[in-house]
Image 1: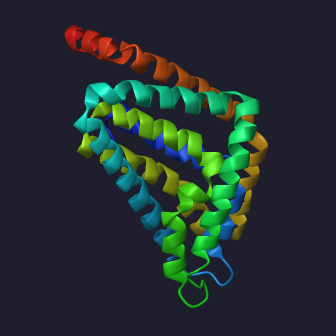
Image 2: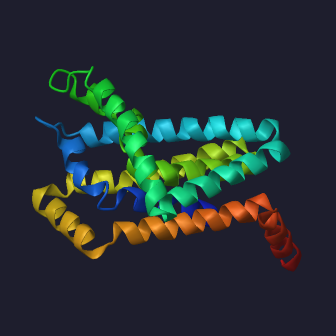
Length: 230
């Protein structure tokens, strides 16, 4: 059960990252494929959650070795990812280069034949899903990783990135198992009722604000104030 407000925020970040017109139309293609498999969505989810958790462990380890030293670099990373999301010109440049890396990742997943090994192919897609969708998920995922790096907590970092992966996975499983009619309705409702640019810009400014808070130690001050008040 998720009770930590930070965990809730990270879960929502994963959920909203994929539930946007940028990512959502590609979900049926990923989870069904040419012939499909009943457990293909589950294999994708397991692979992606494993990757996100591993990233959380690695980032937490870096932060735990030199917690005070890496706070500033991680804060700058949050500012950078926030600027990429908030500014259209920066986002265009980022997307152009990220798309090249995403193309290479997609070709890697093709090395496991989907018809012969549908679950193996799906698992490899899950492992590389963050890279495949890098133009869409990169800034948000990068911002989350930069944040967990400032916590200097390996276990907590792994937990938060697993939580992000859980939020990321819910729309995948939902679209996969709602059936064709339900998937179409969900796709239509999201793409017609949500603004990708508005979501991206709002998230970008939120990352910028968080980066500034971490850079100047305002997060510690706020935490100390809340602790004292309690």
